[in-house]
Length: 316
Image (cartoon, rainbow, N blue to C red; front, side, top):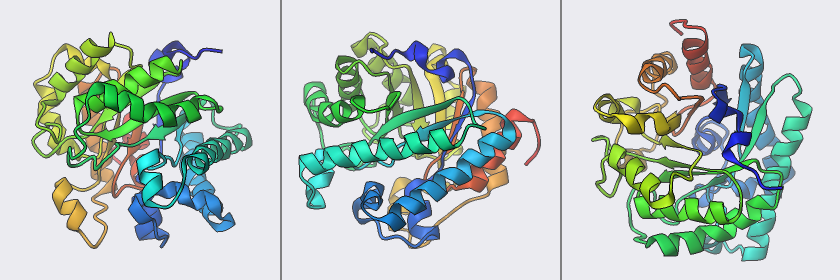
């Protein structure tokens, strides 16, 4: 059965929490080695699967405590063909990783009846380095590349797909066209530098408007991720109609630039309470902001602070 954006509760105004910095938590807090930042490799072992479930359960518990739903994002950010090849995994094995990731989330949804609704998203990452637009694909090339992973995910229990940390409009357009062809709702999340522009220099608002124009507005909504609110808030404050298309934010805890984060040897987890207050400010700017979660350096503490500030108006 074809799934549509209208099947997603967050597009109908229902607030959903989501998780935080999966890879940074697993590496810096849990001590896992994740070559190429590929969390999907943990699906191969009992220990790895246990760690993934523990991570998501911590976040689901926050949703249960606050009486809201949850968006489960699969650990498949690196589970596409090019990244798999770097780790010695052929396409058949990558297809299995994607299926196994969604199955793990489906199990978590079934075992957590106290949280409803729970939406399952197949997570997609950039073909290259999201911080550096080093893989300059055309829209057609991006569609052809991402269609493979989207096809794997569309054949599972995933309710939607979300492409995060994208740095070019062409890649966002390609993802959306591939998802539309696969009949699965899609969200595109762009990352910004400290100046509020995409890594390729496109202003955030222009990127959203161009993406919509080239895809007939087919994305369920847009998100911003992997940047601190201070980096993109000025762009939002100067924005207009495109602000209504932003339905989610997964910000970094750190104010460091992408280049600084790449070189950092220690995790900068910022200040959870401060980040929670930042999200409350963002919600006043973004009237359709319904998906709240974190990115690099954040963990369950940051998500709890977001929930406290945005859902209950506390000062965290």
